[in-house]
Amino acid sequence: MRRLSSIGYDLAGWLVGVVPGAFLTVGLLTGTAQADAERAQRLYDISGMEAVIESLPGDLSDAIQEGWVSDRGMATEVDLLIETYFGTDKMRQMLLGALATGMTPEDMDTVIVGLETEVGRRATELETEAAAIDYDTVVARGGALYRALEEDGDPRVALYQRFVTSTNSVDLSVIFGMNVAYALLSGAMGSPDLPRALSDDEILAIVNSLEPQIRAEAIRYINALTAMTYGALTLAELEEYITFLETEPVETFYEVTVKALQFFLVQNMRDFGHELMQLTGARRT
Image (spheres, helix red, strand yellow):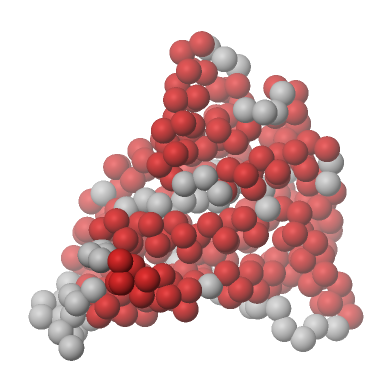
C-alpha cells in the first residue's frame, strides 16, 4: 500500500490533533482469533507495510539530527535511543495486532485479493521501492516529474489527484504529524525540570502556528512521491488501482494502520523527547 507519511518533516513543524485509541498487539490466540492473526500476517506481508515501518526510524533520525544533534558521537546515541523507543519489531507487532482486531475477516480477505492481482502486486512493488528513497530525493526528483506532467497537461495529473483524494493522504499526513509533534514537544520542552518549561498552551501555539506551512509541504511531498512511485503504471493500470483504493475495505485498512502508527508514536514520543533533551544537554542534570 501507499507510504502513509514521511517523518522527514521538521519535527517542530508538526501539528497537534486528536490522539486515536489504542490497538492491542497480537498475543496468544486460538480458534477464530488465530485465523484473524494469520490473515493479518498475510495482509501485512503483501501490503508493503514492512517497508513503511523500516523507513520510519531512519526518517525520524534524519529529522532529529538535522536540528538537534551536534556531533557524530551524539548521533550514534540518538539512533540507539530511537531504536529503544521505535524499534521495527515493536511497530510490526503493534500493526499486526491492529489489523487482527480492527478489521473484519471479510475486509482483510477483500484487500488481500486486490493486492494479489497483477496490478496490485506491481503497485506494491513500486511503493516498496519508493519507501526506501530519502525525503530530499523524493521532493527534488518527484517534484520535477510532477511539474513536467502539469506543464504538459498529462492526464496522469488528474489521476494522481484522485489518488491523493481517495487515500486522504494530505490530511492523514498533517494529522499524523500533529499528534507526534505535540507529544515530542511536551516531552522535550514541557518538563518541570527545565529552567523554563513551556506550558501546554505555548506548545500548542508553536505547532499550530506552522499549520499552513506544514500542509503546503505535505502537498508538495505527496505529489512528488506519487509521481515518482506510479510513473511505471499505465493509465489503465493506475485507474484500476485507484478504483481498488476507493473501496471501503481499503479505506478501513488505511484508517486502522494510520491510527495504530499514530498511537504507537505518540505513546512513546513523550518519554523519547524527555531523554532526547537530556542527551543533547538542554536539560539540567
